[in-house]
Structures are given as C-alpha cells and as structure tokens.
Length: 166
Image (tube, rainbow, N blue to C red; front, side):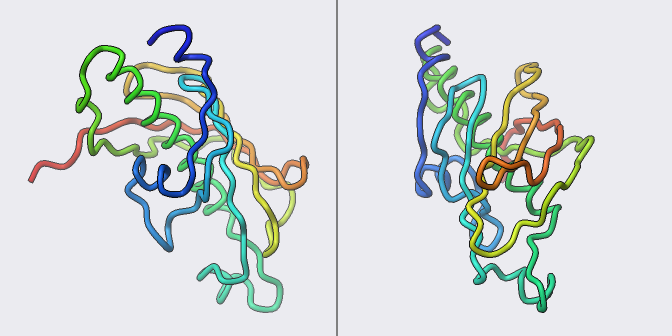
C-alpha cells in the first residue's frame, strides 16, 4: 500500500458497510463510518433507537443496550476497517478480486469495561484503532463514546478468514 493510500481518510454509508460486512438486520450494528484511515483507524456511528429488537427484553422498564452488543458494534467497525484495508492492499498489488467474500472473525476480547448505559436516542461513536497488524490477524483498541464521553472500551483480536467453500 502506498503512503497516500495509508493516510487517505474515507467514509462508508450503510450500503458500503453492507458491501464490506455480511451482517444484516438485526445484527448489523454500524450505520455508517465517518472517518477511516486504512491500516490505522476508523470511527463508526450507531444511532441507537427504541426500535432495536433487544430493547423489548433488556430492560423493558429502562431500555439499555447490552454491553456485548456494544462490543460487537466496535468489532463490526473494526471489520469494515480490516476488509477495506485488505482490499486496498490487494488492489494496489493488482489483485482486484483477492479479498472478495472474506469474513472477519473475533479471536479474543480483553479488558472490556462499561462506563455508562447506552440508551435509546444515543448516537454511539465507535472508535477503533489497529494496535498490531500481522496480515490476516490484527489487534484493535476500541472505544464507544456518547457526546465525547466514554461509554465502553475494550481490546480485541480479529482475523480475516477465507470464505467458506461451497
């Protein structure tokens, strides 16, 4: 990847996110990516609404987004970053279809901490940064923020996997 590619910020609307990830409603937890620097970092957005299916049971009297889904939203943002970066590298190497249909799988989650509840009406900023890149395996630091205040944080490892064989 050239230095220009590595430092060019990008965005992704929900259609671009769905082109990079296999997730769909109700498991697609990233509405858009507002800032992405391939090989470095990304910021995703999740508009949390009362219409989310998990709010029917978590908790009906005081709806709170489950922490595990906040971590999943961070991981999906990292997945967008990882696949976008891998595709940019493949295109730069002249391998246009080399990363088609790849999936990103969680390998580890560490040091997850939840600082404040995420409720309907929140605009969740999902900030992920690559802290170590070993090709198909990368370590990320993630922070979920509401109005600039930390709601949750964690470190996690993910890998890009080949598509399942038919």
